[in-house]
Image (tube, rainbow, N blue to C red; front, side, top):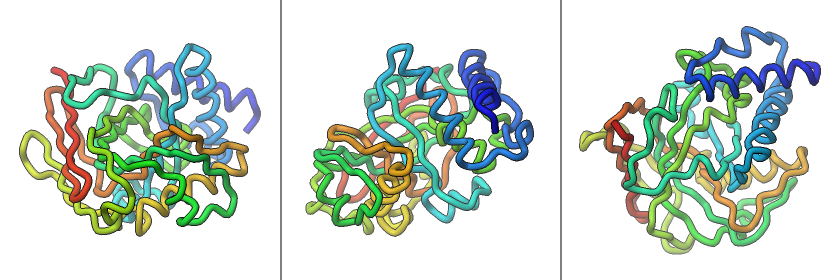
Length: 261
């Protein structure tokens, strides 16, 4: 795709944020767009956000489990950027009007104490860079109508990001088993999904290493203090205004998100 086409596609996504109206799939409008093109669209939006004062606070890994890839009809993981606009305090009402088609995912979030720069980052390297882990809820969203996404659509749309909530129980890596961490996701008190850390590429640490190595060709390193959402342990669950969502993960505590009426 030409630079003008990349900018035009990014502009259409930015307009969807402003108007609250989803757009047709970019994979229909630009049928020859590649994954590389999609990440360039993503970066155009990140530049627009930072120019208006937002700060990149980390990254998210998406599409990590086989179940969620089947659900979204895509075949590979992806990543997006997390900015200061996306952070929501636990238990405080999150404005539902900020989202178009929200869904929720239970995750584990890494907070880094050291930089991670690929290529060739191993799981051991990833573990050494982690200061602590927090339970997290990611509110995913799509600016693409009816979630009719391909891998190009979701990558271009910042990996279908929306917002996230972090729990308040930091856990050191050697105090819990990431793979065996069982998770129960409830919406308004009813169990919606169950899962475990092993659903995240075998271990959330694998997702962290994958991210560092995938960012390397773009010259991007993970920085100390950054947050990395490692990916959903379950399928995504649609949510609506007024919903109260809780993710309880064995060994890591719980985290609650409330969508305002």
